[in-house]
Image 1 (tube, one colour):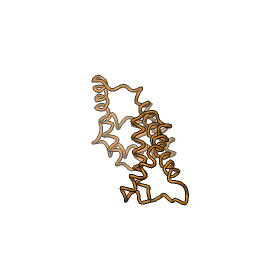
Image 2 (cartoon, helix red, strand yellow):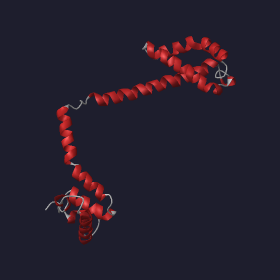
Image 3 (cartoon, helix red, strand yellow):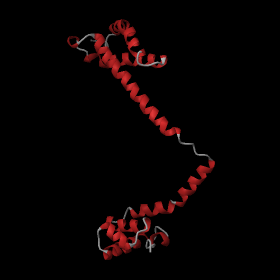
Length: 181
């Protein structure tokens, strides 16, 4: 079919099948605006896929209903995704001024930790792993060594090297904490 190249042929095709397509759509949706939009979308899809029609494989209407089914199904999937997204948002409240102020305070309070984590990103993996477990996760050096599967002496050496490398990035209390006693 040359529907996408011949406006007269497309108009004739449209007039032949618009009522059938509209009936197909309104059996599946109850909103008249959505039905009109989907019908238009179906005929736009016909223009995009006019070259795929092969008369020997079936009638025009069967081909057209296949396109219509795909367009309507895509709409159902979109509507389902939108409903899920709306449902996820429905239980959430917007932040008021007090909430926003508290969030800004938390962000400011964590600024030093973010700086430390950024500085730690430049450390060798072994040193960073020990430092994270001790300074952030509050494990003892022995517990960190066990978690990493290394000897305690190795963990202490790596921790010492990491601390020396980070001295100028963070406060002494963040880096020099030995973890839980």
